[in-house]
Image (cartoon, rainbow, N blue to C red; front, side, top):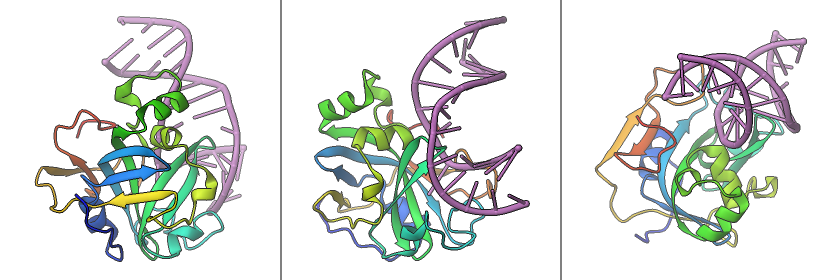
Length: 182
DNA sequence: GTAGTGATCTTCT
DNA sequence: GAAGATCACTACG
């Protein structure tokens, strides 16, 4: 654990590398166990049709956050990998600030504390002000593990209807903290 | 365990 | 007007 976060790579590569990374948002967070990659050529990506006010951060600097509202209710967190490419953080193993996250989520089980992009956003206390903020402080932190975990598996992404043949969902094999089994 | 529905914001048709 | 990178609640087997 501990190497600095270096961005500027393709989203699928970064998505795989982020498994096992440590994510902390203002004192709450844990180990990343599930991610998804989205690119510009990808019909399922927000960036596919070009920049809009909402997805502007996705075309901003790599290593910054892209936070968007999902289904009018939830806030989801992405890491910008390259212009128009980002990695959606889908699930964490809770580690830091668990009490605070439980409080924000309101008596949900520990298993469902950060299992899913919307739940994760609520547990971390994300706001739209986090959109476009850099990882590396003062609010957002991301530490890659020294070595890439070997037990990373890939599968189809969740909740999309286009480009479902791409195996761009990555997860820590056998982890009980995944939003769904692979 | 599965199935249906409501909540409510951004974009596209 | 409809769909979407979602979740929680309810009803029913």
